[in-house]
Image (cartoon, rainbow, N blue to C red):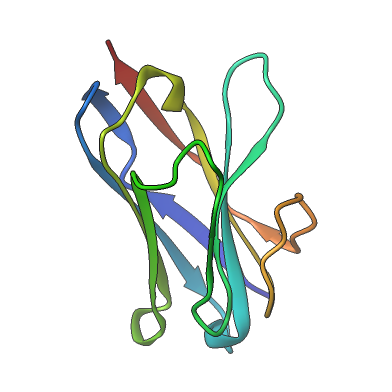
Length: 121
């Protein structure tokens, strides 16, 4: 069993930055891939970025060059650094966990409750 808690969301102006954290409880965190998804009002949940158990990273085209994912297995935490934020990045951001490999679809076993990110123009 893995429990995930996101933090770091908030209100920021366009062009600004935020760093989200996804803290995990449970054993064997290092064996899990972590994905970040987001859902804007009236839209479907979409994949943003993911990091595999071995550290391979995957980015949606919309965030390449602006977002960076990293993990600290000693702290059971994954970070999402978001730079050059745009109003279209506004959404609830969720982290999710599954063993080993990243999927860009929502087939993850564990999900956090989400954290709101709002980017004003």
